[in-house]
Length: 595
Image (cartoon, rainbow, N blue to C red; front, side, top):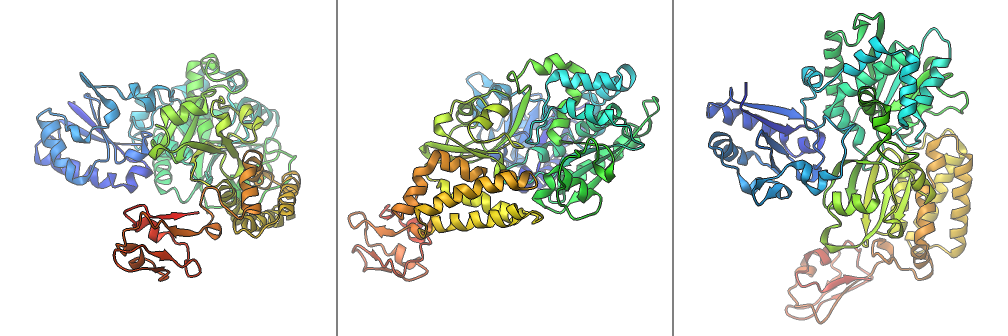
């Protein structure tokens, strides 16, 4: 028995910050101190507070150390693990209380969260199946195979109100029901782990922190629809997730939780991995299945839908990682438990990846119906540097911007659609007053143009024409008639594209036009970017009263565009200026400004 357990985050965020080196150093120091048999070091998945990595939590003391460095390890081992004295300078300040250390569950970041899909992330070692089983893992599969009929499983999901967490929000139980009703000699269960939205890392974190939850749910799905083979389509750019899935599949097979005659019930089900090559369009279900078949990832017209004719032309269900991660808990706790959370039409919880202009960058899981204000100001810790909230982008390239006027909107599927956005897979990028909404729309459209498969003309050509107009606007070369052309083109592409990529590509433009039209007009009419972002419309100047003539700006100007002598005000030659901003970055007196 160990007297202490040290949990070290092994998710991608903390790994990139050096958590593997911290684990090595920790094990070495424990050995030096003779504590290797008293203190256990556990690699976990993501805890959620990605901005504070590398993260280390010591139990049973529940001490949360953040931004730990290798050189901090000897002090933690000697002071805390050997002598019992907490290293206060490394503690996450939100956990500090007058009478000692308060629980993470009581901090602003965690207290409004309800973790279902993320319940084991940051808690167990994802590479140890016994730890998953110790938290109730594979009990749901056992219950389904020994106590429930396939129809009862499907009805349970329908009663729970679970909707697909990949973006479309289609009822999961209904999708499974359609697949079950089709008689075929072979059916398939697929998992979409091809998470491609900029700023999204929800599915990656679940796979890295709790891979067995997905395997268990897919086996349950196989039993429910009558399938014996599953495929997980995962991005090759997720090496940690891929490795942990491989380990998890191997362990499940070894324990006969995958393969032949599971739990002695005669039910056979196995899972294989297929790696995606980074094509965003392969997040669309028909393109994903085409890629699994070994062909170029391009979408097919629907109907027929995959539940009728999917992978290898057989009935197939496809759900994303987060959807599957909820299913074992619904089976164990009952549909009423899940349906008691959320809103009338959007049950349960939703995982969001918080990014952009926010203090607590990371992963959160909140009940449906939580307001945007609560997510950003309370859980996310607000906007840095005293800036004002301007908008939040949900749904990535397929979504739209939520402006400040809808700051108190309850987040669910229908509410977001009503204001011109969408849930998407769960990326939530926060923007402040320094962001240009025209530039934001251009950024997402650049991504869509790059990722279009080119199969249909409206998407292949239409998105490029939209990007050309946006570029003209940001360069100050557009006319008001271009705005009308842009809007008309948006609706044409939206209504005529073959798949969801093209159909939703205009959303960032349409939502920014709806709520920030004045910014578009300022770019066109006044040749001015109100946020001071669009480079072609900027002019850098020096305030004569603030300039001290230190020459720092002139010495760092790559274009030699700044003139002046020591201790005298300097001047920028706007003809030579390349608008790189180096002068503003280097000025210690705030004398350089842009307009």
